[in-house]
Image (cartoon, rainbow, N blue to C red; front, side, top):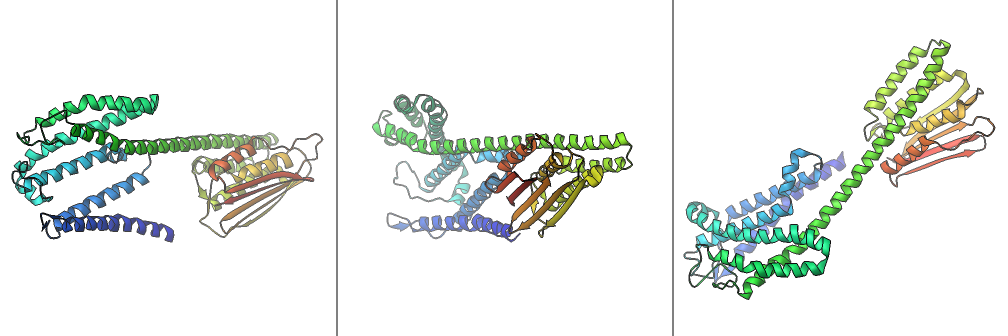
Length: 437
């Protein structure tokens, strides 16, 4: 519990302090900048508050996306907002707003450059008509930038680079830039802000074929490519990990479904034998079987259950077998579990006990013995099951499908955190399972 509280506290500090300090550093930087010998102005609490609120909101959105399950459709729209496309859209909108603020703050901005870099949201609201006039034009320029990025990511990188290699990608990208940059330069020249001696083009003139315009288009192309490649690689690795996780869960479910019928058939055969002999305890055994199946159906499908509950289930199973076998089985049970909150994957231990009855007690009418010990110390759970072997010529004591399933479940559920040994020692079969819970 203390570790959980510490984790929450750490997330809280990061969610508040990190955006706060970042916004403070940005605001101090802006307040220290000078243009033509004059400072940008005193510390702006409005600008600082807006920036802090945006950064904190983005951090909490990041936490929600990290903690949410990929199959949860209710947060699907949040994930789309955190995509690379959305991040670029946000950056371009911020750029358009900043440029709008510069043009609103500086009178006749196209003729009075360089502009004083001021972001004044209050003035933008007061001059909202002028702000809209500037904003839509910078929005057109932002759309041009986004279109270059979109073509680079979804056509040239995902299709040409992935299918034909770097050489074809570079050649086709060069051809694309040479053919399209004059078209987009012409589009920018149609904006109302363009004046006879000044334009919004990187070349700042009216020559749509100027080399500076091509350099700007190529820079956008070159700058977005590494981010796209890094993001695509991260997404690909994430998708592979999710697929592997889904495969593991599907295999675990399949293995659990194999365990359940194995136990059910063995127990039903035991009750069937009692019914044939007219035993009075057949009804009690059916009731015990009902309790066991209820545990299998409702608890056996969980990833973890309380260790005490799984041991109780095992005791009920053993009692069911003892009712059937009577004096043929001498059983010793010793448990030393001090942690009542310890949890374990369900229906692991019963496989060892089932094999003890199946190979040690059931094949012969002679008396047999089973010793079961379990302990939990320093987070390590140790379970041992030792049974006598039936003295039957040519009898096979090899592990069957039950132990194979158990070994596979342990590999999937406790990778690198378990050790299972099962071997014959003289007239005894000894199985030991160690798990770090």
